[in-house]
Picture 1: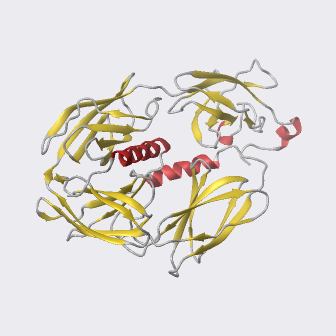
Picture 2: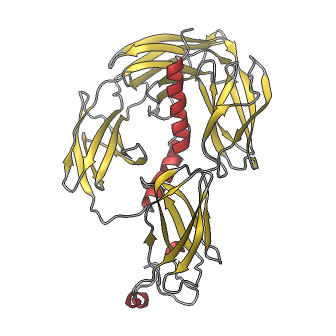
Picture 3: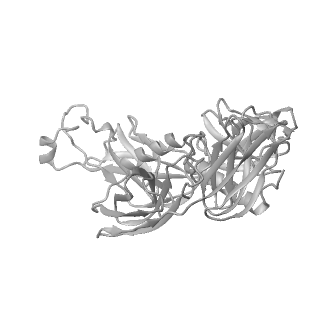
Amino acid sequence: MGHHLPRRSQRGLLAAIVAVVTTGLLLAPATAVAAEPHPTLQPGRAAAEQEARDAARVAPTTAERATKVRGSIKAADKGVKYRVRWFTKDWTYLDERKVTGGIYSLSLQPGTYYLQFVDLRPAYNVRKYAPTDIRVKVGSRPVQKNVRMQRGAAITGTVRAGGKVAGGAEVVAANASEQSYRVKADKRGRFALGGLPAGSYSLFTYDRRKQYVGRSTYLAKMASGQVRNTAITLGTRAGRLLVDLGTKDGRVRQTVFVTAVSKATGQFWTVKARGGEAIFSGLFPGGYRMVAPGVDGFLPQSGAIKGARVRSGKDDLASSFTWTERGATILGWVVDEENPEELLENVDVRAYSGTGTLLGQDVTDNHGEFEITGSIDTQDGVRVVIEPHGNQPYLHSTYYCKFERLTTEAFSVTAGRSTVLDLALPQQPASEQDTKACGS
Protein backbone atom coordinates (compact mmCIF):
# COMPACT_ATOMS: atom_id res chain seq x y z
CA MET A 1 0.00 0.00 0.00
CA GLY A 2 3.02 2.31 0.22
CA HIS A 3 4.41 4.24 3.17
CA HIS A 4 2.79 6.65 5.56
CA LEU A 5 4.09 10.20 5.95
CA PRO A 6 7.51 10.28 7.73
CA ARG A 7 7.52 11.78 11.24
CA ARG A 8 9.40 14.90 10.14
CA SER A 9 6.92 15.43 7.31
CA GLN A 10 4.02 14.84 9.70
CA ARG A 11 5.32 17.69 11.86
CA GLY A 12 5.56 19.94 8.80
CA LEU A 13 2.05 19.01 7.72
CA LEU A 14 0.66 19.63 11.22
CA ALA A 15 2.37 23.03 11.25
CA ALA A 16 0.70 23.79 7.92
CA ILE A 17 -2.74 22.94 9.26
CA VAL A 18 -2.14 25.08 12.36
CA ALA A 19 -1.04 28.01 10.21
CA VAL A 20 -4.00 27.72 7.88
CA VAL A 21 -6.61 27.39 10.62
CA THR A 22 -5.10 30.33 12.47
CA THR A 23 -4.88 32.68 9.52
CA GLY A 24 -8.12 31.67 7.96
CA LEU A 25 -6.73 31.17 4.49
CA LEU A 26 -8.70 28.10 3.44
CA LEU A 27 -8.89 25.86 0.40
CA ALA A 28 -12.16 25.62 -1.52
CA PRO A 29 -13.34 22.07 -2.32
CA ALA A 30 -11.86 20.91 -5.64
CA THR A 31 -13.52 19.13 -8.53
CA ALA A 32 -11.99 17.16 -11.37
CA VAL A 33 -12.70 19.93 -13.86
CA ALA A 34 -11.92 23.02 -11.78
CA ALA A 35 -9.40 22.07 -9.11
CA GLU A 36 -6.69 24.61 -8.39
CA PRO A 37 -3.75 23.43 -6.26
CA HIS A 38 -2.84 25.99 -3.63
CA PRO A 39 -0.64 25.76 -0.53
CA THR A 40 -3.48 25.61 2.00
CA LEU A 41 -5.37 22.74 3.56
CA GLN A 42 -9.00 23.59 4.34
CA PRO A 43 -12.39 24.22 2.69
CA GLY A 44 -14.02 27.63 2.46
CA ARG A 45 -11.16 29.72 1.06
CA ALA A 46 -13.35 32.10 -0.93
CA ALA A 47 -15.25 33.39 2.11
CA ALA A 48 -12.07 33.78 4.16
CA GLU A 49 -10.29 35.70 1.43
CA GLN A 50 -13.31 37.99 0.99
CA GLU A 51 -13.05 38.78 4.72
CA ALA A 52 -9.35 39.54 4.23
CA ARG A 53 -10.17 41.95 1.38
CA ASP A 54 -12.88 43.65 3.47
CA ALA A 55 -10.42 44.07 6.33
CA ALA A 56 -7.83 45.56 3.97
CA ARG A 57 -10.33 48.17 2.76
CA VAL A 58 -10.81 49.54 6.28
CA ALA A 59 -7.19 49.20 7.39
CA PRO A 60 -5.30 52.33 8.49
CA THR A 61 -4.29 54.32 5.45
CA THR A 62 -0.95 56.03 4.89
CA ALA A 63 0.03 59.12 2.97
CA GLU A 64 2.36 57.09 0.76
CA ARG A 65 1.50 56.84 -2.92
CA ALA A 66 1.11 53.41 -4.52
CA THR A 67 3.89 52.21 -6.82
CA LYS A 68 3.52 50.15 -9.99
CA VAL A 69 4.91 46.62 -9.91
CA ARG A 70 4.84 44.85 -13.27
CA GLY A 71 6.58 42.19 -15.29
CA SER A 72 6.38 39.35 -17.80
CA ILE A 73 5.26 35.80 -17.04
CA LYS A 74 7.62 33.65 -19.10
CA ALA A 75 6.47 30.12 -20.00
CA ALA A 76 6.76 27.60 -22.84
CA ASP A 77 2.99 27.19 -23.31
CA LYS A 78 1.19 30.16 -24.83
CA GLY A 79 -2.25 31.45 -23.90
CA VAL A 80 -2.16 30.20 -20.30
CA LYS A 81 -4.23 32.16 -17.78
CA TYR A 82 -2.80 32.83 -14.33
CA ARG A 83 -3.83 34.15 -10.94
CA VAL A 84 -1.42 36.35 -9.02
CA ARG A 85 -1.80 36.67 -5.27
CA TRP A 86 0.16 39.07 -3.12
CA PHE A 87 1.15 38.73 0.53
CA THR A 88 3.02 40.77 3.12
CA LYS A 89 6.60 39.83 3.95
CA ASP A 90 5.30 37.48 6.68
CA TRP A 91 2.86 35.83 4.22
CA THR A 92 -0.32 37.56 5.37
CA TYR A 93 -2.76 37.37 2.44
CA LEU A 94 -3.70 40.74 0.88
CA ASP A 95 -5.47 40.25 -2.45
CA GLU A 96 -5.39 38.60 -5.87
CA ARG A 97 -6.35 39.05 -9.51
CA LYS A 98 -6.41 37.08 -12.75
CA VAL A 99 -3.77 37.71 -15.40
CA THR A 100 -4.07 37.20 -19.15
CA GLY A 101 -1.61 37.96 -21.93
CA GLY A 102 1.53 37.08 -19.99
CA ILE A 103 1.99 40.52 -18.39
CA TYR A 104 0.96 41.44 -14.83
CA SER A 105 0.66 44.91 -13.30
CA LEU A 106 -0.09 45.78 -9.65
CA SER A 107 -0.20 48.97 -7.56
CA LEU A 108 1.37 48.43 -4.13
CA GLN A 109 2.33 50.66 -1.22
CA PRO A 110 6.07 50.82 -0.40
CA GLY A 111 7.20 47.71 1.46
CA THR A 112 8.28 44.10 0.95
CA TYR A 113 5.87 41.57 -0.57
CA TYR A 114 5.64 38.03 -1.87
CA LEU A 115 3.86 37.47 -5.19
CA GLN A 116 2.50 34.02 -6.02
CA PHE A 117 1.67 33.01 -9.61
CA VAL A 118 -0.74 30.09 -10.16
CA ASP A 119 -1.51 28.35 -13.47
CA LEU A 120 -5.32 28.25 -13.82
CA ARG A 121 -5.48 25.17 -16.03
CA PRO A 122 -7.37 22.22 -14.47
CA ALA A 123 -5.54 20.08 -11.92
CA TYR A 124 -5.79 17.00 -14.16
CA ASN A 125 -3.64 18.69 -16.84
CA VAL A 126 -0.21 17.06 -16.45
CA ARG A 127 1.40 19.98 -18.34
CA LYS A 128 0.24 22.44 -15.66
CA TYR A 129 2.91 24.74 -14.22
CA ALA A 130 3.83 24.62 -10.55
CA PRO A 131 2.97 27.70 -8.42
CA THR A 132 5.87 30.15 -8.41
CA ASP A 133 6.68 32.68 -5.67
CA ILE A 134 8.84 35.78 -6.00
CA ARG A 135 9.90 38.40 -3.44
CA VAL A 136 9.65 42.06 -4.39
CA LYS A 137 10.74 45.20 -2.56
CA VAL A 138 8.63 48.24 -3.44
CA GLY A 139 9.88 51.81 -3.07
CA SER A 140 8.88 55.08 -4.68
CA ARG A 141 9.89 54.09 -8.24
CA PRO A 142 8.17 51.57 -10.54
CA VAL A 143 9.49 48.01 -10.21
CA GLN A 144 9.88 45.41 -12.97
CA LYS A 145 10.05 41.80 -11.77
CA ASN A 146 9.70 39.01 -14.33
CA VAL A 147 8.73 35.48 -13.37
CA ARG A 148 9.51 32.19 -15.14
CA MET A 149 7.05 29.31 -14.77
CA GLN A 150 8.27 25.69 -14.62
CA ARG A 151 6.38 22.55 -15.54
CA GLY A 152 5.14 20.87 -12.37
CA ALA A 153 5.46 17.25 -11.44
CA ALA A 154 2.35 15.10 -11.94
CA ILE A 155 0.84 12.00 -10.36
CA THR A 156 -1.59 9.69 -12.16
CA GLY A 157 -3.25 6.45 -11.15
CA THR A 158 -6.39 4.58 -10.19
CA VAL A 159 -8.14 4.32 -6.82
CA ARG A 160 -9.83 1.12 -5.60
CA ALA A 161 -11.82 0.78 -2.36
CA GLY A 162 -13.14 -2.47 -0.94
CA GLY A 163 -12.00 -4.30 -4.06
CA LYS A 164 -13.91 -2.03 -6.48
CA VAL A 165 -12.99 1.08 -8.47
CA ALA A 166 -13.61 4.15 -6.30
CA GLY A 167 -15.32 6.68 -8.55
CA GLY A 168 -15.28 10.20 -7.13
CA ALA A 169 -12.55 9.44 -4.58
CA GLU A 170 -10.55 12.50 -3.54
CA VAL A 171 -6.76 12.38 -3.76
CA VAL A 172 -4.67 14.91 -1.81
CA ALA A 173 -0.92 15.25 -2.37
CA ALA A 174 0.77 16.82 0.68
CA ASN A 175 4.44 17.72 1.02
CA ALA A 176 6.69 18.76 3.90
CA SER A 177 6.79 22.35 2.61
CA GLU A 178 3.33 22.95 4.07
CA GLN A 179 1.48 22.64 0.76
CA SER A 180 -1.37 20.40 -0.38
CA TYR A 181 -2.96 19.78 -3.78
CA ARG A 182 -6.14 17.84 -4.54
CA VAL A 183 -8.28 16.39 -7.29
CA LYS A 184 -11.20 13.95 -7.62
CA ALA A 185 -11.06 10.68 -9.51
CA ASP A 186 -13.47 10.08 -12.40
CA LYS A 187 -16.23 7.44 -12.31
CA ARG A 188 -13.66 4.75 -13.19
CA GLY A 189 -11.45 5.73 -10.27
CA ARG A 190 -8.82 7.32 -12.52
CA PHE A 191 -7.08 10.54 -11.47
CA ALA A 192 -4.37 12.92 -12.65
CA LEU A 193 -2.87 15.66 -10.52
CA GLY A 194 -0.47 18.08 -12.21
CA GLY A 195 1.20 21.37 -11.32
CA LEU A 196 3.10 20.01 -8.29
CA PRO A 197 6.32 21.69 -7.11
CA ALA A 198 9.33 19.37 -7.09
CA GLY A 199 9.63 17.36 -3.87
CA SER A 200 8.36 14.32 -1.96
CA TYR A 201 4.63 13.71 -1.48
CA SER A 202 2.25 11.61 0.56
CA LEU A 203 -1.03 10.80 -1.18
CA PHE A 204 -3.99 10.88 1.19
CA THR A 205 -7.06 9.32 -0.41
CA TYR A 206 -10.69 9.77 0.65
CA ASP A 207 -13.39 7.33 -0.44
CA ARG A 208 -16.43 9.29 -1.67
CA ARG A 209 -18.74 6.98 0.32
CA LYS A 210 -16.52 7.29 3.44
CA GLN A 211 -16.53 3.51 3.89
CA TYR A 212 -12.88 2.59 3.29
CA VAL A 213 -9.49 4.04 4.19
CA GLY A 214 -5.83 3.12 3.83
CA ARG A 215 -2.38 4.35 4.74
CA SER A 216 -0.96 7.09 2.57
CA THR A 217 1.15 6.33 -0.49
CA TYR A 218 4.58 7.97 -0.32
CA LEU A 219 6.29 9.24 -3.51
CA ALA A 220 9.83 10.48 -2.91
CA LYS A 221 11.86 13.09 -4.79
CA MET A 222 9.56 13.97 -7.66
CA ALA A 223 11.28 16.25 -10.17
CA SER A 224 9.82 19.14 -12.19
CA GLY A 225 8.09 17.77 -15.28
CA GLN A 226 8.12 14.16 -14.01
CA VAL A 227 4.91 12.11 -14.32
CA ARG A 228 4.61 9.15 -11.96
CA ASN A 229 1.83 6.55 -12.06
CA THR A 230 0.68 4.76 -8.90
CA ALA A 231 -2.19 2.53 -7.86
CA ILE A 232 -4.05 3.32 -4.63
CA THR A 233 -5.94 0.64 -2.70
CA LEU A 234 -8.21 1.39 0.28
CA GLY A 235 -8.83 -1.89 2.09
CA THR A 236 -9.67 -0.96 5.69
CA ARG A 237 -13.19 -0.28 6.93
CA ALA A 238 -13.44 3.35 8.06
CA GLY A 239 -14.65 4.51 11.47
CA ARG A 240 -16.47 7.62 12.71
CA LEU A 241 -15.73 10.05 15.52
CA LEU A 242 -17.92 12.51 17.41
CA VAL A 243 -16.02 15.17 19.39
CA ASP A 244 -17.62 17.43 22.01
CA LEU A 245 -16.05 20.90 21.74
CA GLY A 246 -15.70 23.15 24.76
CA THR A 247 -13.70 25.94 26.37
CA LYS A 248 -12.97 26.74 30.00
CA ASP A 249 -16.22 28.72 29.92
CA GLY A 250 -18.40 25.90 28.61
CA ARG A 251 -19.63 24.47 25.33
CA VAL A 252 -18.42 26.13 22.11
CA ARG A 253 -21.21 28.32 20.72
CA GLN A 254 -19.93 29.37 17.31
CA THR A 255 -19.72 27.44 14.04
CA VAL A 256 -16.09 26.59 13.27
CA PHE A 257 -13.94 24.43 10.96
CA VAL A 258 -11.81 21.92 12.89
CA THR A 259 -9.33 19.31 11.67
CA ALA A 260 -8.65 15.82 13.03
CA VAL A 261 -5.17 14.42 12.28
CA SER A 262 -4.44 10.69 12.46
CA LYS A 263 -1.52 9.89 14.77
CA ALA A 264 -0.86 6.74 12.73
CA THR A 265 -0.71 8.19 9.22
CA GLY A 266 -0.67 12.01 9.40
CA GLN A 267 -3.82 12.10 7.25
CA PHE A 268 -6.27 14.88 8.09
CA TRP A 269 -10.04 15.35 7.96
CA THR A 270 -11.73 18.77 8.20
CA VAL A 271 -15.39 19.36 9.09
CA LYS A 272 -17.66 22.27 9.98
CA ALA A 273 -18.63 21.90 13.65
CA ARG A 274 -21.96 23.25 14.88
CA GLY A 275 -23.57 23.32 18.31
CA GLY A 276 -20.35 22.29 20.03
CA GLU A 277 -20.07 18.99 18.12
CA ALA A 278 -17.69 17.86 15.37
CA ILE A 279 -18.57 14.65 13.49
CA PHE A 280 -15.85 13.01 11.37
CA SER A 281 -16.54 10.13 8.97
CA GLY A 282 -14.24 7.91 6.89
CA LEU A 283 -11.42 7.83 9.47
CA PHE A 284 -8.41 5.54 9.69
CA PRO A 285 -8.34 3.47 12.93
CA GLY A 286 -6.31 4.81 15.86
CA GLY A 287 -5.80 7.92 17.96
CA TYR A 288 -6.27 11.50 16.80
CA ARG A 289 -5.10 15.05 17.36
CA MET A 290 -7.19 18.16 16.80
CA VAL A 291 -6.05 21.33 15.04
CA ALA A 292 -8.51 24.15 15.68
CA PRO A 293 -8.80 27.92 15.16
CA GLY A 294 -9.58 30.34 17.96
CA VAL A 295 -13.15 30.37 19.31
CA ASP A 296 -15.14 32.44 21.82
CA GLY A 297 -12.14 34.55 22.83
CA PHE A 298 -9.70 31.61 23.07
CA LEU A 299 -6.54 31.20 20.97
CA PRO A 300 -6.02 28.59 18.21
CA GLN A 301 -5.02 25.27 19.71
CA SER A 302 -3.75 21.83 18.73
CA GLY A 303 -3.49 18.73 20.86
CA ALA A 304 -4.78 15.22 21.50
CA ILE A 305 -8.52 14.57 21.28
CA LYS A 306 -9.33 13.21 24.73
CA GLY A 307 -10.67 9.66 24.65
CA ALA A 308 -10.46 9.33 20.85
CA ARG A 309 -9.82 5.76 19.69
CA VAL A 310 -11.29 5.12 16.26
CA ARG A 311 -12.00 1.45 15.43
CA SER A 312 -12.52 -0.06 12.00
CA GLY A 313 -16.20 0.10 11.04
CA LYS A 314 -17.23 1.50 14.47
CA ASP A 315 -18.48 4.78 15.95
CA ASP A 316 -16.64 6.59 18.77
CA LEU A 317 -19.08 8.90 20.59
CA ALA A 318 -17.16 9.68 23.78
CA SER A 319 -14.39 12.10 22.72
CA SER A 320 -13.79 15.73 23.68
CA PHE A 321 -11.51 18.69 22.97
CA THR A 322 -11.14 21.80 25.14
CA TRP A 323 -9.63 25.23 24.40
CA THR A 324 -7.61 26.44 27.39
CA GLU A 325 -5.70 29.64 26.53
CA ARG A 326 -7.54 32.95 26.33
CA GLY A 327 -6.63 35.62 23.81
CA ALA A 328 -5.79 39.22 24.61
CA THR A 329 -8.53 41.79 25.29
CA ILE A 330 -8.47 45.48 24.32
CA LEU A 331 -10.96 47.64 26.20
CA GLY A 332 -11.50 51.21 27.30
CA TRP A 333 -13.42 54.44 26.73
CA VAL A 334 -13.72 57.14 24.07
CA VAL A 335 -14.22 60.79 25.02
CA ASP A 336 -14.50 64.10 23.19
CA GLU A 337 -10.97 65.56 22.98
CA GLU A 338 -12.30 69.10 23.45
CA ASN A 339 -14.62 68.08 26.31
CA PRO A 340 -13.02 65.10 28.06
CA GLU A 341 -15.91 64.76 30.49
CA GLU A 342 -18.21 63.81 27.58
CA LEU A 343 -18.23 60.07 26.84
CA LEU A 344 -18.97 59.31 23.18
CA GLU A 345 -21.27 56.55 21.98
CA ASN A 346 -21.52 55.08 18.45
CA VAL A 347 -17.78 55.32 17.81
CA ASP A 348 -16.21 52.60 15.66
CA VAL A 349 -13.17 51.04 17.34
CA ARG A 350 -10.97 48.72 15.25
CA ALA A 351 -7.73 47.02 16.27
CA TYR A 352 -5.05 46.08 13.70
CA SER A 353 -1.87 44.04 13.88
CA GLY A 354 1.48 45.46 12.85
CA THR A 355 0.92 44.07 9.33
CA GLY A 356 -2.52 45.67 8.99
CA THR A 357 -4.63 42.58 9.71
CA LEU A 358 -7.94 43.35 11.43
CA LEU A 359 -7.82 41.77 14.91
CA GLY A 360 -11.30 42.79 16.06
CA GLN A 361 -13.76 45.65 16.32
CA ASP A 362 -16.53 47.10 18.48
CA VAL A 363 -18.81 50.16 18.72
CA THR A 364 -18.90 52.23 21.91
CA ASP A 365 -22.06 51.99 24.02
CA ASN A 366 -23.93 54.87 25.67
CA HIS A 367 -21.20 55.03 28.32
CA GLY A 368 -18.47 55.40 25.69
CA GLU A 369 -17.12 51.93 26.49
CA PHE A 370 -15.78 49.32 24.08
CA GLU A 371 -14.30 45.82 24.35
CA ILE A 372 -12.46 43.88 21.63
CA THR A 373 -11.92 40.19 22.28
CA GLY A 374 -11.07 37.20 20.13
CA SER A 375 -8.15 35.04 19.09
CA ILE A 376 -5.61 37.81 19.67
CA ASP A 377 -2.19 36.40 20.51
CA THR A 378 0.72 38.17 22.22
CA GLN A 379 2.21 40.70 19.78
CA ASP A 380 3.77 44.12 19.31
CA GLY A 381 2.81 46.85 16.85
CA VAL A 382 -0.95 46.85 17.51
CA ARG A 383 -2.83 50.04 16.58
CA VAL A 384 -6.41 51.12 17.20
CA VAL A 385 -8.44 53.28 14.79
CA ILE A 386 -11.50 55.20 16.07
CA GLU A 387 -14.05 57.27 14.09
CA PRO A 388 -17.81 58.03 14.15
CA HIS A 389 -19.81 54.88 13.48
CA GLY A 390 -21.00 54.31 9.90
CA ASN A 391 -20.07 57.84 8.76
CA GLN A 392 -23.56 58.97 9.74
CA PRO A 393 -24.63 62.37 11.18
CA TYR A 394 -23.11 62.39 14.63
CA LEU A 395 -24.12 63.81 18.01
CA HIS A 396 -27.92 63.52 17.92
CA SER A 397 -28.55 67.27 17.52
CA THR A 398 -26.55 68.10 14.38
CA TYR A 399 -26.39 67.00 10.76
CA TYR A 400 -22.79 68.05 10.29
CA CYS A 401 -19.56 66.13 10.72
CA LYS A 402 -17.87 67.00 13.97
CA PHE A 403 -15.12 64.44 14.56
CA GLU A 404 -12.08 63.12 12.72
CA ARG A 405 -10.51 59.68 12.59
CA LEU A 406 -7.77 58.89 15.10
CA THR A 407 -5.07 56.20 14.85
CA THR A 408 -3.19 55.42 18.05
CA GLU A 409 0.52 54.84 18.44
CA ALA A 410 1.63 51.20 18.33
CA PHE A 411 1.37 49.20 21.55
CA SER A 412 1.71 45.59 22.75
CA VAL A 413 -0.91 43.08 23.86
CA THR A 414 -0.52 39.86 25.84
CA ALA A 415 -2.63 36.72 25.56
CA GLY A 416 -4.84 36.22 28.61
CA ARG A 417 -4.53 39.86 29.71
CA SER A 418 -6.47 43.09 29.15
CA THR A 419 -5.03 46.28 27.69
CA VAL A 420 -7.00 49.35 28.80
CA LEU A 421 -7.10 52.46 26.58
CA ASP A 422 -8.46 55.93 27.34
CA LEU A 423 -9.01 57.45 23.88
CA ALA A 424 -9.93 61.01 22.91
CA LEU A 425 -11.62 61.56 19.53
CA PRO A 426 -10.42 64.83 17.92
CA GLN A 427 -12.88 67.36 16.50
CA GLN A 428 -12.56 68.72 12.99
CA PRO A 429 -11.82 72.44 12.55
CA ALA A 430 -14.91 74.50 13.29
CA SER A 431 -15.10 75.75 9.70
CA GLU A 432 -15.32 72.20 8.37
CA GLN A 433 -17.93 71.21 10.93
CA ASP A 434 -20.26 73.78 9.40
CA THR A 435 -19.60 72.91 5.75
CA LYS A 436 -18.96 69.19 5.46
CA ALA A 437 -22.04 66.98 5.76
CA CYS A 438 -21.57 63.48 7.08
CA GLY A 439 -21.79 60.83 4.42
CA SER A 440 -20.97 63.17 1.55
